[in-house]
Structure formats: structure tokens, C-alpha cells
Image (tube, rainbow, N blue to C red; front, top):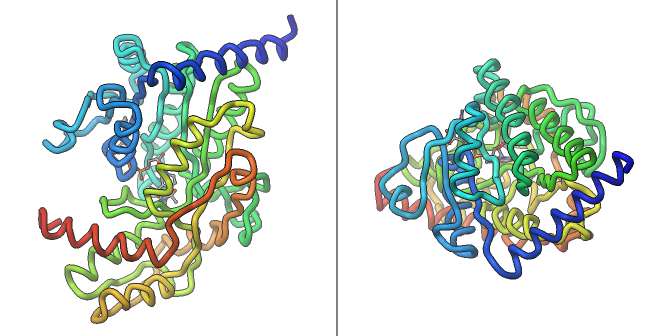
Length: 341
Ligand SMILES: NC(=O)c1ccc[n+]([C@@H]2O[C@H](COP(=O)([O-])OP(=O)(O)OC[C@H]3O[C@@H](n4cnc5c(N)ncnc54)[C@H](O)[C@@H]3O)[C@@H](O)[C@H]2O)c1
Ligand SMILES: C[C@@H](O)[C@H](N)C(=O)O
């Protein structure tokens, strides 16, 4: 049998196996790096669909009581291959959602650690997924593009020459995933997300301003923005990001023409965002003091083209800028009342 035929037959076996999970028995899902901005909300979303016990959150940090009491939580260091093997075997894991990473701004502050967590970590999870026949989801980002890429719009396939270690590690993850798909039939799936906006604290990225602005304005009446007022970046509310993730994870393999898709909801600048916020919070001020994150933002897409995701698996965002602002004002106010955070 040729290599290509072998890969194709493995792929067919995987497809059948996974569609039977969806029809009969929910998949057992492990989320790595699960205590970050996306992981906790993702676990809530997937537990609502597949049942609490079927979604295991993991990270290397101590969870809050709320997270610990909400469903299975375990320690998992992405750099410990044997430890990960043990978890997959003992918990009979079917799908792996790999969130562990150092984001764009924080990665520049500690490049060796970003190389370990983002690149070595990816080597571990992809080998694990291959060994145990797991479906694996790895998020990529608008940060996987660079100054040589077309910025408005940025298509699914184009030049990718990022200038951050975060972006380099994500391009590496994309290429590795595609390679494992073609060579071994691994069911690798990847979405390139824009800045994801939620009321939870962000992990040290370039798009964090669009979260911090709500917290600072609601608590202090003022925000000092580290990007220039006209810096346009693609963004998405977390509700849409998690719906995209779960719809894509469930999409039958025969709908997918690629393993990696751009997804987005909108693009805005700090000035446009603050103009919308004035309707809800009339009395606040914003000043601008660009720092090194401006250089990163200036190398990223301004408008993201997600037409391939829309065409192939029917992706469509629901939350527009008006609704995003209403949701954020409401959710951040609730957080401030609940814990002064
Ligand atoms: N939030 C966004 O705007 C956004 C956009 C595009 C892509 N993504 C991707 O989504 C994923 C999750 O993003 P996030 O915003 O939740 O990130 P985050 O920084 O908030 O969370 C990352 C988590 O990884 C964990 N981690 C670090 N080292 C680890 C290790 N050795 N072992 C296990 N876990 C470790 C951290 O403790 C943290 O909880 C990342 O891969 C990120 O690149 C996020
Ligand atoms: C865009 C995304 O990858 C992340 N929020 C960052 O800014 O690094």
C-alpha cells in the first residue's frame, strides 16, 4: 500500500469512529491550558453539550473553588509527555483541545519559555494525538501573519512571515498539524481566531486592550490605551469563538477542504470601540500611549477573510459590535459587583 493510501485509509477509519461518538456516545474531551481566558468558558460551553463528566479541564495552576467545583479538573503540564499519556489512557480521552500557550505580548518577554510551551508543547500533544487516535483542536491566530501578508483582507492562504515568537510557533503548529494529517491521517483541526473578547482576564496578548478598556472605564472612569486610536484589528466575542470551535469540531470531515480556517466577526479600532461604549457609559476618558504592542498590531491583519469557513462548514458570526459592547458592559459590571475584580 502506498503512503498516501495508508493515510487515506487511516483517515476513513477516524471519520467513522468519530461520527459514531456524535451519534451514540459523547466524546471524552481534555482541554489543556484550561485556566486561561478561553479554557474555563470553553469547558462550560462543551459541558452543556456533552455532559460535565465528559469535559476535563487541565492546567498547571491552582483552580478557583468555582472552577474546581464545576467539573473534572486535573494537573497537566504540557511539557510532560508521560504525564499526558497517563491522562489520555486513564480518562479514555477522545478529543484534545490544546489551549496552553504564551500569547503575543508575553511571549516577547520570555522567548525561551514561549519556545518551550508553544513549540515543544505542540510536539507533545500532536504525538499524543497520533499515538492514541485522538481528534485534536489547536487554535491559531491573526498573529500567524506578518507585515508581508495582505492586511485588508487577509485570506486563508497567503504569505505568513510573523515577527513574534507567538506567531512563529502558531505557523509551526499549523504546518505540523497539516503534515500529520496528510502523513498519518491525524484528525487535526485548527481555527485562526481574531482577538477574543470576554469579561475574563486576558493572557497577555496584543488585543487585550479591548477587554481592559471595559474593566478600567467601569472601575476608574478612564483608560490609557497602548495602541493608537486608529489601529484596526479583527475581533470576536467569546460566545462566537466557542460556537465556532464546537461547530468546527463536530463538522464531518467530508465538509472540510482544509484543516485550518480563518474565522472572525468584526474589525474595529480603539476609537470606534470607545465611541460605541459612550452610549452605555457616558462619562469616561481615554488617552493613548502606544508601546511595543503597537509594532505587533501594525504587522497583523486589519480585516480577516473567513469566507472559506462560511462556505465549507457554514460558519456565521452572531454577535456584532453593538451587541459585543452591551454584553461586555453587563458582564464586567456583574464581575465587579461579585468580586470587585
Ligand atoms: N484569547 C485570544 O484572543 C486568542 C486569540 C487567538 C488564539 N488564541 C489561542 O487560544 C489559546 C488559549 O488562549 P487564552 O487566551 O485562553 O490564553 P491564556 O494565556 O489566557 O491561557 C493559556 C494557559 O496556558 C497555561 N499554560 C502555560 N504553560 C503551561 C504548561 N507548561 N502546561 C500546561 N498549561 C500551561 C497557562 O497557565 C494558561 O492558563 C492559545 O493557544 C491562544 O494562542 C487566543
Ligand atoms: C490575537 C490573539 O492571538 C491574542 N489575543 C493576542 O493578542 O496575542
